[in-house]
Image: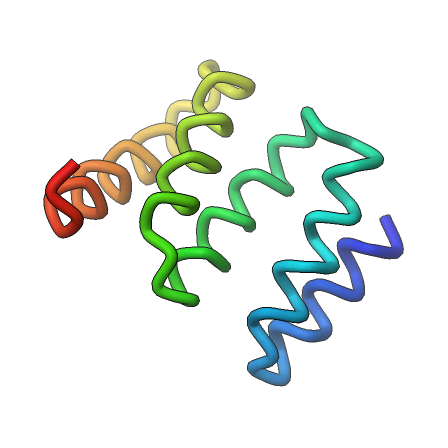
Length: 87
């Protein structure tokens, strides 16, 4: 939990690479935390790392298929990212 808070603090001051590193530390402790994968997808997207963003959004969908609203949002983001990246 502390690593994820640090990640959000870094993100709030536009230190996206530090935010990503802190969130990876949080994910080491909780690899199946859906919120971490969702947020990592957004962080990676902001950092211009489309393939990493796609990987985390896809993992989010695997872990959280029952959440209709967020699943639709993530599916739309995935379609857009894949179209932009040609994958």
